[in-house]
Amino acid sequence: METITWPSDWLRGTLSYAVLGSLRFGPMHGYAISTALEGAGLGKVKGGTLYPLLTRLAQGGLVSSTWEPGSAGPGRKVFAITSAGQLHAEQAEELWRSFASLISAAIAGPARTDISYPQNSRSELAI
Amino acid sequence: MNDLQWRDRFVTELRMMEVAGSRVGDELKIVQDHLAESGETAEEAFGDPAEYVSNLGYIRTDGNWTSLAVIALTAYLLTSLVTDGVVASVQGKDVLIGGGDIIAAAMAAVAACVILVVATRSRRPWLLPAGLCIATIIGSIVVQSAWNPTMLTVDGPIALVIATALLVFLIAVLVNHAGGNRITDPVTGEDMMDRKYPRR
Image (cartoon, chains in turn orange, cyan):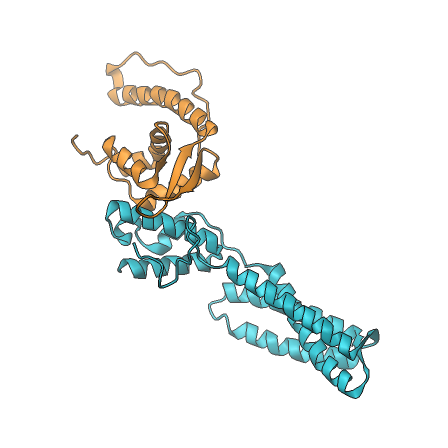
């Protein structure tokens, strides 16, 4: 996959949703999340960015974590999405689709006329 | 900065935030796990240790006031009971505990808490605490000389028995306090700052 360097302010605002999304595949340790995000084309997410974000998600009750002993190497902290996190991610997914559509239309300017405002556009998904 | 220097700075930064040893161990293990997997250096993966700690969202506290006050109070009572108890036992008299003695003990506990606050916040943590220690000692002597009506009478040997019990209590509190600040591996429970702990 071609590596694109996304604007950092885009990633700053959306990385938490991408992390929650990656955990919807199942529990993962930190480096696996980082690899998954990179594999998804979002670029390399440094540990210095990822773990504080996971801490905030855990404090918000969206992610839980447990230590699991490693079979050969050091033990790993495994992160899992909670039911609240799952719901949050589902809401974000729906709302984001509408938002992306609106932004695309806004950027396209007069060329687009199929703008439709989502019913739940007033939802708050701040983390 | 090599990984060992990074680790030491990271631990120091967390300690300055009064983060408990078990939490420090947790954070340190996350870093070690990530570095073992990624093959990156600590500085590459996590950047400046101080900045990383500030991003982790810990809020600085002024330490554990209650345990320090208990330690200071116990130490003061222990010292008083031992000195007075020995003298009273030798002379065959009772130990007299006065109102001034109780006020002096309370002053020692309060001074210990103030010293803790100053030591964690001040750029020159020795200056005010040193002055406060001297002021507390002088204040205690003045209070005990000026107003010290007898509130309690204890036999000399009993005072020594109480002092022994206080010593045991003080040791238990100190051991418990030191144990709580050990940086332990969240999986194995090993001391992560021990030289024998594997550097991964």
